[in-house]
Length: 460
Image (cartoon, rainbow, N blue to C red; front, side, top):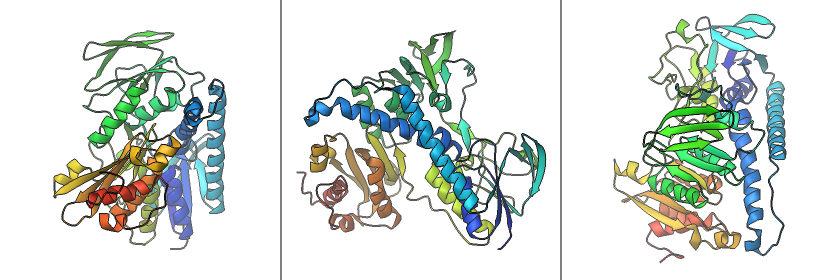
């Protein structure tokens, strides 16, 4: 294993974790990164959006301080300071990853990588070009926002998620095309700042990949905050571009004039310029690299991880895929398990889901649903955060927990107890009989498990 030469293309969550794990296994590791260490998640996704959400959530808390018996003056957002804080956090964490790579003696080359063959990489850098040869290569080049071909993305009013994170001023109005995870999170950021928001989703519900009950609850929460939402509606064209914004027309005949438009219709694998045409690497119809449970491609010695393989476009999945790829590249039999991947949406309120939905479970087995509203939680009432609900998907005969969905306070943290239950096949009886501290948000999981057992305590 010692001195095995591993090349990793991309220093995002999957790439840098794969590099660290390979270094721990005594490999000689080189990472090639075209942009910034940390990839989309750290620089243009997870971390900057959560930094801004922390600011807007604090703003909302101050605005409802009187409900908690505290009188304060008018809360006014300082957008430039919010953005400065966001940039400071991103820079600090990026420096932390850079330190980890150096501490593990991983070489980092800044440049654009492309395959010459299955073992040789051509790198274009600011100072010229170089070639690199590796025994094993891990592709972790990530993804980029999907662009609609009929829209002028050079116009200042047109944004992807990346440009939205670099705005200098709060937009007075924002049209969001695509009410998936990204669209809903940006709505939760800009709505408290006073932006008038309209959301358009071509599917029959917002958050199309989520449980319909959770999606409906989220839509009601957004509309309660004054956000206009159109489902089963498509953007047909931008009929006017102006210095101060655009006017859009939808397939239902509606027209909207707005200062900014955010296109959040998905992401695509970032493989352009990788030289995949020099390999017989298998990809699917969307351009995602096809891999097996060991993260192996169809070519021996080449692995792919993270967004570039499609599936779960989540940093924590890329972390695990990076570990699996590195271990297999270095002779350890390692496999990825996607059965209990938590999916977290940092809207207001938050959403956390894992495992099967009721509709999906019923396609194969007899299953039931148990629900518990946060309105029945003492902790939620005391904190003034009683909006939302928690539900478990349970196999009828065995009581085994197959999945769960939460919309409400701290959902992104609470979902992990359900993830453990799904991962290890726990039953509702086992969770219900585990004493949970009172008053806490997490005891709602015990409560819903008791409900599934037919022994509810704080519900009739």
